[in-house]
Amino acid sequence: MGILDITLLRNKHFLALVGNGIISVFSVVMMSLIYRALDKVQVGSWFFFLTVYGLADAIRNGFLSTATVKFYSGTGQERAREVLGSIWFLAIAVTALLTLIDLCFLPFVGYFANPSTIATIHWFAPTLFSALPYTIAYWILVADERYIPILWLRLINSGSMILIVLVLMYLNKMSLHTLLLFNFFTNCLTSIAAYSARLTKNKTFFHRSWKSIIEIANFGKYSLATNLSSNLLSSTNTFILNFFLGPAAVAVYTLPTRLMEIIEIPLRSFVGTGMSGMAAAFNNNDMGKVAAIFKKYSGMLTWVFVPIAILAFIFADLAIGLLGGGKYIHTEAPNVYRLFMLMAIFYPIDRFNGVTLDIIHMPKMNFYKVLIMLFACVVSDLVGISISKSIYGIAFASPITLLTGILVGYVALKKHIDYSFRDVFTIGFKECMDLIIQKILTPFFGYKA
Image (cartoon, rainbow, N blue to C red; front, side, top):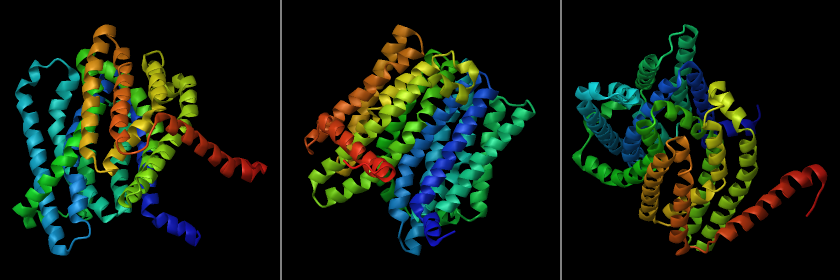
């Protein structure tokens, strides 16, 4: 292996990308196994549980993950212990509060008929506590930019779960209960591994201070609001489907939403690259360059998504069958996936709207944008499901939410940067053609524009 290769393997951005890629593959494999091993009701109940758990995790992460990086990174030893001790205190407090809410429902669990709700009430608190040490270790490792231990912890968590599911399937013991039980055990295993490797720094708990606790809490409340609202936006459809149509509908609807990862991976990559460029331009008071980067990246990605959306539209049945199994091909899932992929063409504009609002120091406007989208989502979902009485009511309400976000973001950004949809499409098309000519046609065919 050459020096260049070794340098690449030590690059933090490369390691983070590889880690996310591996975990994404694990997630797809895990999802495919679950869809094949359980019936629709159990699959829907599992994903409803994950949605509720994800909402709680968004509260804990939104409140403390960014705060950990901000207040801990680059500090002296004494200050670091004080900050981490305060983080531990607040993390335990938030987890205990969420657990208390769950326990309030426990005496009334017999009154619930929905299996998703019953499973969630039983397993929410144990799962949340089992992941606490592992979660805090993850925040600390991100702040320290130690991506190899992060990868190992995630491999332990995801890899052990896949192995357990395979064994349960082989023994014909797979069920919703065993899945929830061993999910709890794999969280415990990962937390024990993090503790054994001294990654949790739990002894700093005794170095906490009220000054740091208040400081971190005051900062965390702002990032919590946006993070929670974004999570609610992605979770609303699951909640409405579960309580109006049942967990089987959740199982069918979740398939196409998880397949959208094919769009999310390049989208996250472009957003991450574009953010740094826009931030540098904004810090130099160059709003023209901010606008140019916005148009270039959102426009290019829009055109890149066009052929992907066309291929997904044609091969939707195949994609759904590969991930969920043949029993889902004749459900609403393939058509919902087709609709989502057509919508995905406009995802870059919406995502870059929000990112740019943050970059130009308008996070409050971005928060309002998400809230307006959430309101549009709930209203359109309720109207759609009351009219159609099916998953299609939820699916066809999604473009309304997306359009609302694009328009609100456009109006907000138009006041600060020179921006039009026509510019996005024309500049994006030109950049794509230049890239094709420079990287493909010229090297391989000697073509010159």
